[in-house]
Length: 233
Image (cartoon, rainbow, N blue to C red; front, side, top):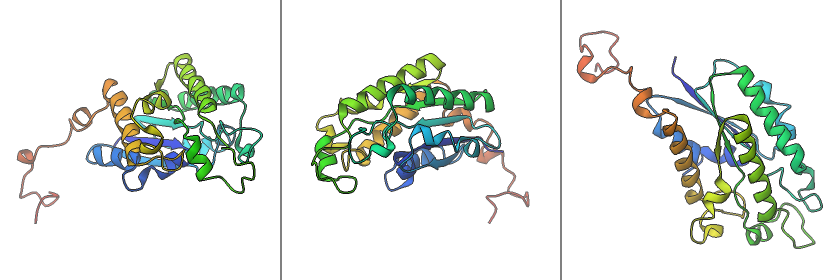
């Protein structure tokens, strides 16, 4: 059975198999050696994730799993996305519970905690969630940064891999418009950053095409007369 990798997250994960998406890029990169499975839940925060995690974590253990939540948790409690808001201390506890559940279910799975991305507040004003009579963004970059910091802390405390997307993305010139399509969701450039960061972390842990493909037979080793030969015309 081929090894698998699960992408677990909110809309930024759910959308990742679209054109230029980071999930699609991972699937293409590992196309001969690893099955990339999408488990994206648009709009979810970590509180709601705990209600579905048993359905996500079933079957054989994946070789790796990304956990990418926080953008919705970080919605401000007094604006239009208040229903998605989760207080910072609870967000951190929820992430710890998610990691603990995965570790207990699949002890050998490599877990990558990805922070929420930065927020372009101008983009959120231009693309508001529902009616927004206040004219204020329902998310701010400062709040997203606090949740990103908490995510990195949980990764360190739980001994899993942290991907600090919030910091990394802001190192790019004009990141607000270059990396984010609506102040929150990713452009192709933003997706490329996520893909590259995930690949970098996986490679460092020895999860790469070369090691995963080590057991595949070479073409020179395949008998063309074998009726089960997939390369036979």
